[in-house]
Image (cartoon, rainbow, N blue to C red):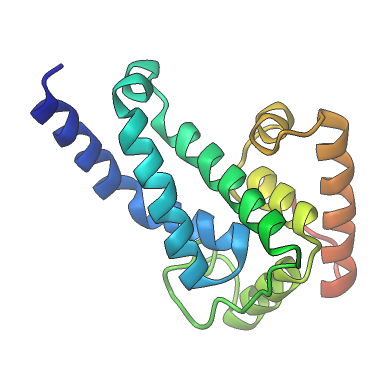
Length: 167
């Protein structure tokens, strides 16, 4: 594949998936500015590996993995918990159309209040719909850990929201 063709394919992928990946980055780190930095880093790493990743046929999974690992690295370097903020009123947030505005905001606040690993597992499993194995692989933890973080996270959300969650 010629360089111009590779760059065109990369550009098309980024344009098609950028907004979704930005929301994933936000869900992982809880701050729009950090999410933008995280996404920029991930897209740079994707560009470097594009010819190999494009052949594998799943660049989105590769970028998600970069987002998760880069966020974990940033968290370790800071040696403090990432502060979370609300999503605001943004209509760009998925799920808003299925919930009322107040319900949606309460759910987002509850997710952002979860401990780091529970939040990541809940986002990957229940927002992005990854299965246990995929989530474990992306976070670099065991499948049992995914299940326990998911269970604890959902229980915390249920307690915070005061009602059973629809799964």
